[in-house]
Structures are given as C-alpha cells and as structure tokens.
Image (cartoon, rainbow, N blue to C red; front, side, top):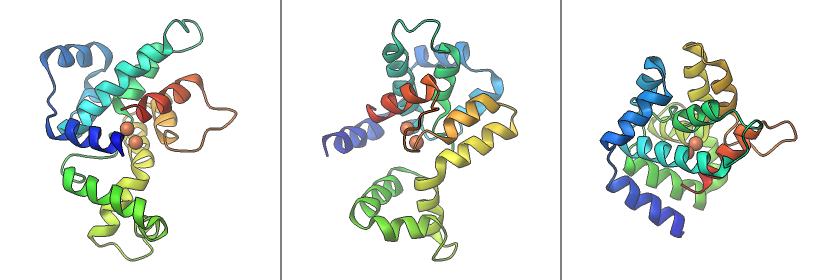
Length: 173
Ligand SMILES: [Fe+2]
Ligand SMILES: [Fe+2]
C-alpha cells in the first residue's frame, strides 16, 4: 500500500529535469529517445528512477552485466504505456480493478468482453510489456525488445542478469 501511495505522489509531482535530459541524450539514440518521450511525464520519471536504481543494483558486477543495455532497457521498459492512453486516473483505476477483481480485470485486458474502453485500458495494464517490445522490434532494437517483453513475466532459469536487475529496480520504483 505504501508503494502505491508513493507512486501516486511521484506521478502527481513528476517532471523531467535538465540533468535527466542530458542523461537520456547520453544513454539513448534518437529513435530510442522518441520512444521514451512517447510516455507520459510520470512514466518518464518512473523510468528514470528505475534506471538509476538498476545501475546502483548492478553495482560492481562489471563484466557480468551489460550496463548500457541494462540502462536502455530500464529507460524503455514501459514505453508500451503511451501518453494519453494510460493517464493517472486510468492507472489508479486499473490498479484497483486488478487488485479487487483480478480475474475479471484480466478478462477485460485479454479482450474477453469486446474492444471497448475497459479493454483498451486493461490491455495496456496487462500487456504493455509485449506492446513495448513490439514497438522496439519495429525500430530494430531486438536485444532491448526481448528484455522489455519479459519484464512482468515470472522469473525463469534463463533470465539474463539485465532482466533480473530490471525487475528488482522496477519493483522498487
Ligand atoms: Fe511495466
Ligand atoms: Fe515499470
């Protein structure tokens, strides 16, 4: 619950500072920046915090972790939640719906009740990882797409270290 409250206040007071822009320009190419800025400002801020956490969690695992790939994945992991599709109202709604009525919420997200507004919102909530991965693949970023696609999947034996760290950092932000 505390995490939800923290996320809500982060979303309300979000803004991307000048030093964050410099960081983005250093870590992402033009195409990736366009995808990043396609998210709402609160999601951009979440992605920036996730990237900073991921970098510090990776710590001194130099040689075992691909830091540039990890940073790009952290910055881009939620691009499937595009600005205007999933604002703060719908985010709060989706979290409550999914917490209180998980199987009904999942059915809406899977299209079991048609393609109305609840389908579109819950689809983003449940499937933004696959949506974002498809966007990355279309732009030719296959390595990032593979990690982004799996960021909400249950941990597996063959998870690369960048994916494991991204999941932890995402959970903390
Ligand atoms: Fe996500
Ligand atoms: Fe996230």
